[in-house]
Each structure stands twice: as structure tokens, then as C-alpha cells.
Image (cartoon, rainbow over all chains, first blue to last red; front, side, top):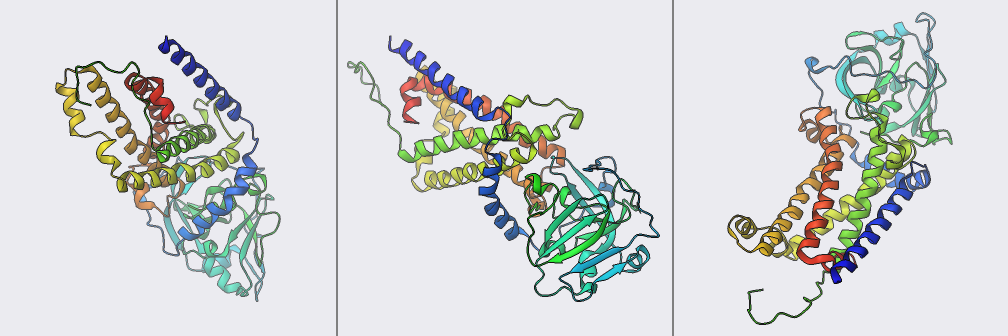
Amino acid sequence: MSKLISRRHLLQWSGLSSASLLLSSCGSTLGSSEVGQVFEPLNQATQALLLSQKPVPEFSVSAIEPDKLLINTFDQTPQIDPAKYRLQIEGEVNHPIQLSLTDLQTLPLTSMVIRHVCVEGWSAIVQWGGVRLHELLRLAQPKSSARYVYFKSADGYYESWDLASATHPQTLMAYQKNDQPLSADNGAPLRLASPIKLGYKQSKWVTQIVLTNQLMPTKGYWEDQGYEWFGGL
Amino acid sequence: MTATPAKRPKSPPIPTQALLAKIFHWTNLISLFVMLFSGLQIYNANPVFGGRGGWHFPDFLTLGGWLGGGRSWHFAAMWFYALNLLWYGLYVLISRRWQKRFASGGDVKALRVSQNAKRKNYALHRLVYTAIIPILLLSIASGLAMYKPASFHWLSNSFINWQTLRTIHFAAVPVIILFTFIHSLLALKVGTLRLVRSMFI
């Protein structure tokens, strides 16, 4: 008899708990943005704490995975005339500058083989070649008030980074991928590449870099839809 | 617990559990299921098996509504899940519960040689719930390796490659669901619903 009651209780209990779990899932966004807002400061502080200016160990050239890098764009692929292309660096800097591709290519070339990690879960080991962003910022001489770096792209995409991540020795403005000139799909003529940030932070077709002393209400195309801002790896 | 052939009381004494063990169980169960459903939401952004063309989990099994929402839940619940396991692990060590409440050589021996069915069930159950601990820890390690592959590059690189890492992390889902069933069934077998209830209420 007691066994029967037990079983009935068990069934009720398991029925209730699975029903509530189903209700709570339902595939709805209910509560997601609130949960994100509550925990993002903690997650961001942890990521900032983990951020080191030491280079992330790189992979060998034979480890490159040419087929794994998927193309993600939020809109259209802009076609940019390399001869007319200019990169502007402005905002909280003492010497705003404009650089052509030839200017960029005369600066020291840094090559790295790193893991590119997408927010969607996939990753690809890629070789990127380009100029250290740190080097470019040094040319523009950031003011001491500069805290954040905004990147504006030819397709309307926009991003913002913390200055410490932007000046990491492996954060490049890249114009080469896997030892070839960058293709339009991958962000030609110039894109961000770094092992320390998720893929959506690594803007393609960058035309303008603006240093700011604060974070604007618009932080980035995906961040403004609910992705976390720091996006550190 | 040694057998006294004299009459046994009609109902065995109501099992009692330490309050901290109950808190651990509640927090673990809830945070683990949030991790699981939000994890399936993240999975759907790029299925581990087959990539974008691969099979997707139906919406009613996902939490968050979209990738960003799934990630918000996943990286909130991870704190409860991981810290819960951490303090409980410390408690088990400091209180020396690991000596009495977890599987030992005696249980392995009982499974092999004991003629007592109850003792064998008891031993089997202790082995099962002890074995889940390394599995829970592995799910944290593989999660951390994917969440922060630059900061913890040594951990990420110890999982052979990215696909293996993703597969191991995902394997936690079927393994933990299976464990929850077996753990519940064995607990019912060993101590009836009174034992299960004692761990939560």
C-alpha cells in the first residue's frame, strides 16, 4: 500500500517538475536580456581580469584549417577600391591620421597563426598578416583620456573594444589571410583579427577607428541586439 | 547495521540528510537544467554534429529564444553550477564525508563477492553517484576550455582539437540525463521515496 502511494507521489512530483521545466524553456526570450544584464558585469570583470598582454601561444602553419573559417556578414559585402581606400584614426588622439593601403603596407608586418572562435560555437585556425593596432594607435598618439576604441566598417557594421584588448600585441589590422591577400568576403582591404576576442568583435572592411573616453549607448551591431560587449576569449 | 535477527521495526527510520547536502542538490539540479536547456539553444546556432546543416533541437527543448539569450542564461547559470560544486567539494573534504558517503574499495568488493542483494544495490548506487563527480568536473573543464580558449589555451589544447572539445562538452547532456534517471531509480531501490525525499525536503 505504502509503495502505491509512493509511486503516485513520485509520478506527481516528476510530472510537476517536468511541466515546469517545459514551461520555463518554451524557446522564448523571456528573461534572457534581464539575466544577461544582471550577470554581464560579473562576467565582464572576470574576463577583464583574465586578459593578459602576453601573446597567446600560436599554432604551427601546418595546423591551419582553410575550410573551417565560415563567412558571416550582417548585410552586403562592400566592394572597396584599394587605390581609394583610406583608414582614418581619430577621436581622443593628438594626431588624427589617414592611411592608405600603401602606407599600411610599409609599416612592420606581423603574422600570426591563431584560433578564430565564433560565438556560434565553431572555430578555425587561421593565419593573419597585418599591422599591430597598437602600432597604428601609437602613430595617432592617443590622449590619456582614451578608454575605448570604436571601429566603423564600410558596410555599416560598428564595434567597440576596450583599449587594453585593442593594444594587445596580437590584435592586428589584417590585410592577409593564410598567406594570401585578404578576399572581399573576409574583409578586404582591412579587418580586425585577434585571438583574444570572439569573431563578431573582429570587424571586416574597417574604414574608421575612433578613440573615445566612454562607451556610447551603441556599443556594436550585435551587442545592441543582446550579445555581450566584452566578448573576450 | 549488522544483522540482528530479532524483529525489525515495521517502518525503517526516516533517513535524514545534512542541510548542506540538500542545498547542494537543489542548486545542482536547477542550475544543471538551466545549463542543459540553454546549452541546447547554443548548440542550435551551429550543431556539433553536421554544422549548420546538422539536426537542430526543437524549440521547446531550448532556453533563451536565440543564441544571445541562450548564452546569457548559460553564462549566468555557470556560476551557480560551478561554485556549488566547489563549496560542496570543500565541505565533503573538510567534513570527511568522502570517507563515509562516497564509494570505497568496500563497495567494489561487495559488488563482486556479496550475496546480500541490498548491500549490492547500496554499493552500486554509491559507485554511480561517485562516478558522476568526475563527469561534472569534466563538463566544467571542457566548458571553460571553449569559453576562454585564449586565457586557458593549455586546457583547450589538451582536448586534441576543437571538434573533440565540443563533442566532450556536449556529451555531458546525455550522460547527465542518463545519470539522473539511474541515480533516481537506484535511490528508490535502496531507500524508497523516503530517501529521495530526504535529499530535497
